[in-house]
Image (cartoon, rainbow, N blue to C red):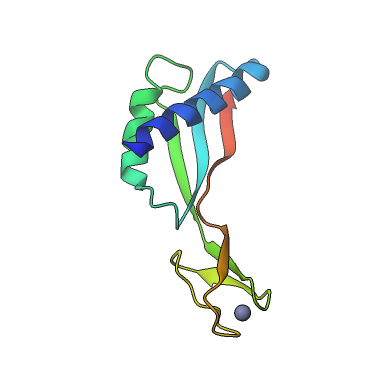
Length: 114
Ligand SMILES: [Zn+2]
């Protein structure tokens, strides 16, 4: 499952940040998940709980923020919100659209008990 390796990754990132500031426990993690990433929030939360077991991140609340997809037209450089990877430029009608946002998964913020 793709979500599991991502969850392990998230735990590694937040543990490194927590250790860097000498924190004792992570209470919540705000995650940005691109709408075009194809990731299931429920699966991510489930996998995170498993990956965080016996670490400082165990029991931390996962707050998921969906990030809009954004595309940029390669023909006319128009930038717009897209809801799929196959988008049409609303300005010139072209299909040569580069996805510039919406496929990422990133840790936006952390709440740490010191
Ligand atoms: Zn265009």
